[in-house]
Image 1 (cartoon, rainbow, N blue to C red):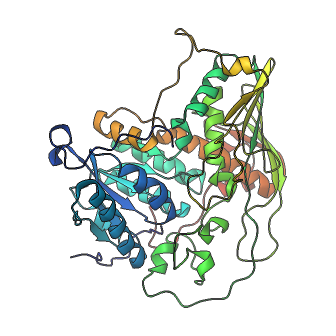
Image 2 (cartoon, rainbow, N blue to C red):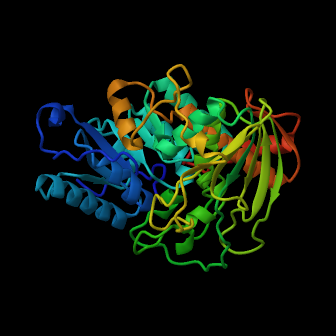
Image 3 (cartoon, helix red, strand yellow):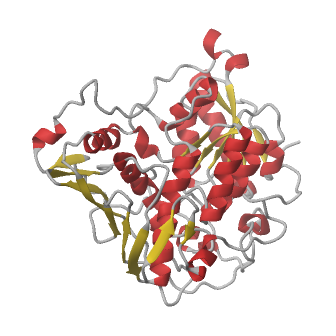
Length: 449
């Protein structure tokens, strides 16, 4: 799971629409010369349960390299990939190359694209270096920890002409696309309000310093963030792949406002056609732990006003999902009983994925001359298709940057607890030096762009 900027170390080696699995030994269209060679950077929970797991189902893609700064996880990843391919081909050894320095993986000319499934603080820097190395990228959300770094990532992707898919997989689910189409086509009248519910994480206790595990390159795991002492609950479990503690440390992530917020705010933007802009005014507040290792936000309620007049409320007090409220009704869309990984902090109680104030809204058909949004049956498959066609994926980098930016703006609002005025074109707060100082973070040498 943990990847970081360079260490100079040598490598350790000299949902919906699941695809039909075709044996990887098939010839013709899926012959080895026509396959997409993929490297996995960060091989923890989200990679094993989601990114590698979904990519490995496609016969025209081959995971040929894995990388992590935890050597135990590298070994596990090699075994994981080989065992999956063995079930498809009967070949127990598929030649997966292990690395403990992602820069060496990026230097491998045989690799076409990379899955980046690291902690949040590594997303932007590895994403930038990957596209500059000529790789296409599937990048776990959020795009970055700061708006400045997200802008740098988007600029790098456009400068290099690479394909980058943000892991906002709700765009590849029927109910989220259909709900967005219903809103865009006026089935609830004029959109007035959007109410978003997110989970939150509990705080924790103080944790004592522990010896750094021999298999973990901890300095590289910390990357651009300040040096702090090692303790297991700050990083990831040394045994197993349960939910890691870094998700609850502001040094490495912003908490659930970006963790789940990147998903839900992205769909909200999709539905109201604001994918390339953001709110113009924000306000609200949040509770933060007063002690303990885990310091991301707790209970919160924040608001964003968009130039189109729509107000967005985001809070843990609301049901997990997105509610669109218009002049003629409402629509609520959520994941239902789906979870991306077994340790997701969400209710296990099944719920309907799409409901409305009037059932006729749900059964409404989108006419041929109405707005139809792009269709993706599976998010990783959509990325692989984009790699082949060079057409933009369903969640391109600028869209991901804008949804992440909106989340980070809500996070800044939590911190400052006052009204903020945002210019989505200049990507700066209006006449607010204090707020603008929070658009970036210092980077620790040598882990810089």
